[in-house]
Length: 488
Image (cartoon, rainbow, N blue to C red; front, side, top):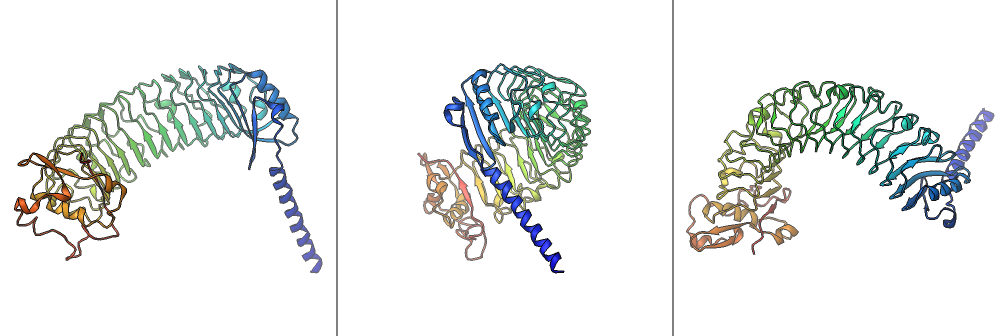
């Protein structure tokens, strides 16, 4: 029994020594002298060396790599080659080096020789080739990077993604191709990434005119798809079939004019949908079929809607964030948020043309915390409009509205006057203003001359709700921040 205990003790000591040795190996990384690798520089990081070569050429870079190859067990955690003259990456240039993250950025890189990256394929996890002159995906040079997790090809000159462009990248999780000139994607472009680990794909800032459905349909594990800033003019049912796990879809700043019925019906796991910055005038009442149980964030701002698309929105039972800013909404119907509003915490209606708020328009917004009505055409905000949301409201913005100083604003003045957080920086710099027509001047809402206005009745009788315990004015657990226009 004693021998067995000693055996366990020695095993533990051996393991501790092994861990210590590995730790020492990690921390014993030493940079070459500056003169050896100049104009490159070196610093020691926790996980290895950080090598930076900027504003130089292949000759100096090759010299620095040769010096680093002479360093036994050197781990180059970051190799950053930026702003260089490096039109071609030579074969085996990194042979004998242990590189984990490689960046070749803004270096006029146009060609990667077939064997340029193969020698570091077993350790490289991140590759950044952004802002270069690549016209095609360098498939052959990439195919041996079997441990790559992130590939950044942003801001190159790639015009098309050919078939099997990323074959061999078995472990890739993030692929970003933002701001190229991609106008076509072949049906088998992502073959080799399908049913593997790809979680995020960025095709934004290109020249696509339609959804590349065939190419995307095999990416069953994709979580985030970004296609903003393209030239997509229409979407239709079936465009997103196969993307069963998609959580976030970005279609902002395209040329969409409508959202047709059932177009997202295959995206049952979708949580966030960005449609802002298009030219949308119509949202079909069945547009959001399939999104009922999971969609929480919907952005429809900067479009051309003339009313809240309530019929389409009513099926979204879990919607929390609704952005309708900068449309042409002129009228809010009293039932605009009926049937789906009880889960909404954020509602943005700024930069519209709304003149009147019906008394019960916010009646169903039982969870509302942030309300933006900035820059509309509102002259009056009666107490009836907000009394159903003040218990949850934490932030309201009514700046840049032509408010008229009248007795209907008496409740609002009292609301501001009883805020606990009167020293808030925004509150100290900004005030809500209204115009007194009879005097042709502006007043801060807090300083409306109510006595001279002869305010009587309902509004005058509700200077403060502190006596009744109403949380509109005095509950410190619900700090309200009221943004407003600055009085000049």
